[in-house]
Length: 228
Image (cartoon, rainbow, N blue to C red; front, side, top):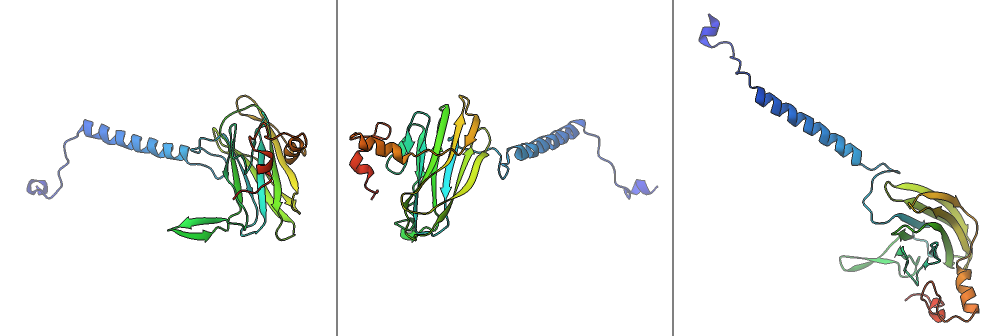
């Protein structure tokens, strides 16, 4: 009797198409969520968007006045450094001069940058050994400087293959941070720290009377003068 007066809600007619569409939307939403989880990068190893194959970074304490330089040599003998920023697949993306003229422009104003970092990227695969050296160009403080060198393989996922600290203690001090070898597919097959002087490569050319270094294209006189 009560139902005759509409006191109980009436059920809607069953719509199988509507139910199927709703379930399909649930499945799509779930798959989208899984896709987001799959592409999220991990803190150390993960997917990244980069055109480089390897990234090599040198850093030392913030606001430090000393000038350190990063030198990277590829298997063909090309060397990327502050006087020859592009060499083969090597590119010096950031050259840091320590306390000398290290500024950034913000809203038209020149602001001193506290960051002390140099970056070299390897933008192609060339099988063989790469050498990563650091030179203490100007030791303003006269005190030892602790620097850190990190090498990351970027593709297909980010992977740290070397990360270590070392000390430089005087102007002209040169240290081999790491030497690593890759195969034709870009896989790292060996990592070690055998010393090898890259500055001596330049000095040998100068002593032999060469006007221009074959691997850098830098004149003998220009290499002795700091960039402006």
